[in-house]
Length: 149
Image (cartoon, rainbow, N blue to C red):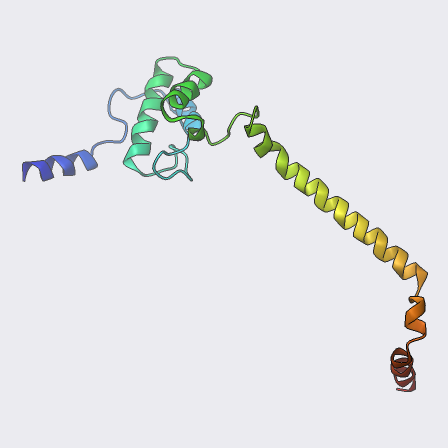
C-alpha cells in the first residue's frame, strides 16, 4: 500500500522541481529541448512530450542551462548517453549528409523527368499523327463517322 502511495505521489510531482529559473533561461532550455528527441515517444521533442522520461530529460536540460552550458555542450551530453539519434536534426556530415541531400536529388530528378516528358509530348504533337495511323482502315472509319455526326 505504501508503495502505491509513493508511486502516485511521484506521478503527480512537479515537473521541474528545484530552484525556479529565470524566464530567459527557461526560454533557452525550451528552445534546446525542441531539438532533442524524446527517448520514449521518438516522434516528439522532450519539450513537447508529456512522458515522464521526456520531462526528466527536460529537467536535465534546465539544469545544464542553469549551469551555463551551451547548446552544443548540452547536445554533446545527450549524444554521449543516447547516441546521435537523440537529436531531432542530425548533423549534416558523414552518412547523415545523405539524409540532407537525397530529397533535393529526388526533386531534381522528378523535375528532369517532367521536363523530358513535356518536350517529348510537344514534339509528338507537332509531328502530327504517326504514318502507320494514317493507313489504318479502322481509324479511317472512325474518323469518317465522327465527321458525319
